Amino acid sequence: MGSLLFQKFDPLNLKFFSSESNKVIEFITGYYKNVDKYPVRSQVKPGFLLNLYPKEAPFQPTSLESILQEIETNIIPGITHWQSPNFYAYFPATTSNAAFHGEMLCNALNVVGFNWICSPAATELEMIVMDWLGKMLNLPQSFLFAGNGGGVIHGSTSEGLVCVLAAARDKALKQYGEDNITKLVVYASDQTHFVVKKAAKLVGIPPRNFRVIPTSLSTCFALKPNDVMMAIERDLESGLVPLFLCATAGATPSSSVDPVEGLGLLAQKYSMWLHIEAAYAGSAFICPELRHYLQGIEFADSISMNLHKWLLTNMDCSCLWVKSPRVLLDSLSMTDEVLRNEASESKQVVDFMDWQIASSKRFRALKLWFVLRRYGIHNIMTHIRSDIELAKHFEALVKSDNRFEVVVPVKFSLVCFRLKPYEKEGEESSKVLNWKLMEAVNSSGRAYMTHAVLGDIFVIRCAIGTSLTEERHVSELWKLIQEKTDVVLE
Image (cartoon, rainbow, N blue to C red; front, side, top):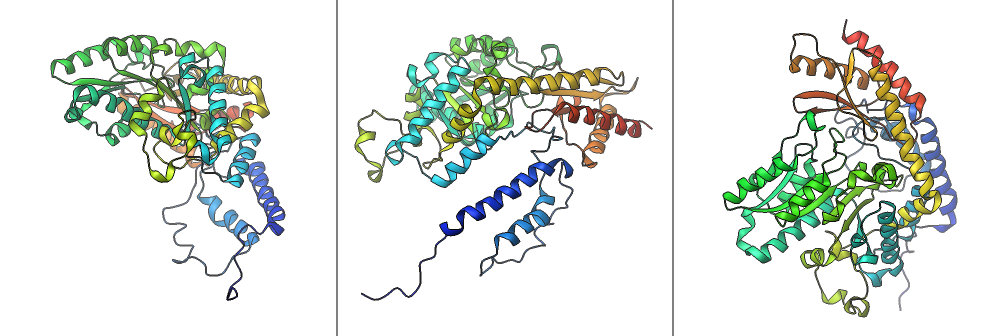
């Protein structure tokens, strides 16, 4: 045998693993200690980073010290700091020590748990935590593995929506015939996130068959079942097939909550799939005083929520529960000789590759397990409630200034407010005025908020909930808003 010409490359290099890992952790710790000193919204111009680096990757290695220095000088300025206590845009991306440690272990173990045999613990821990969380939310037994339902952790709500829409589509086509896909109709409100429409398009539902039902301030922008029913009846008269109804619990523009029970009865009447999209507010329903928003959930076929938004579980951790996994598997399951094994063929195990789009699967359950174990239900509820109290504090500050109004009653931790329109001036001038105010706040670098248009009302959204935000930050935000308002109104 010939001798090796080259020494094998050692990317793990365990001799230096601990010391280098500690340097990275020290860098991260320093970042969090100083995150509120950075402009919240990145101030760079397009192309800033493209012009800093050569067109080819380095041929020789770069020292860790140099890389960390480049992150500080080159990368950090181009980051919008979602972990800043002054980030109030979109919805938060919460973080925690427990989730970080769980993610570290997930990355270190680096298992690919597409089926049970590849890593039994990865599959079974996911089943455990999904049932734990389902019980925390007081979901019906039929959504739990213990009740012949079950849940799966995806990377995003979008992935879960594609899966359940595909399942609903295939179930309907078995009844109506493969050629009738152009007759299937999906229903949602004008508050529903656009990813529902995108998912419908991806599974072959024609965009013309996506019904956006208008809402209004009179119902706090929640769907009215009668409006949905009228749309369904019109489609039936046209020979179309009502397929899928999405009820939103905590909509992105307004945090509105659709009446799940009323929509559930409607879905049952017309044999439609009812999905509850609770990406943002779903985490809050672990608090008993907020569970009434899910009244009627027993009529639903599926529910999804993003724990990385509000349950301290870091990107990415999106949970989907289904009442009938068999329907999901009928649509998504694929077989191949290379995947054959006794456990799968026994039908006594779960293979999560049949519950998702991708075949591969990260050990995300370890991260969620860490959070639930380290903090417990009590502390997680305290975290949710404290954010809601901060939102109520901000709401009170807005109401204390007669130049402003809160447009939608605060349910969770989102406050939709605006400068009141001038007398005898319309919504367009109000939009311009409030846009100027929002941009004045955002361009200062001291805070970051976004907007929404509710009906024809332009509102500024203040979404409270980053892990580091305290009452003093909310009070400072209000002082900043008043300071910029004085300038805008000059």
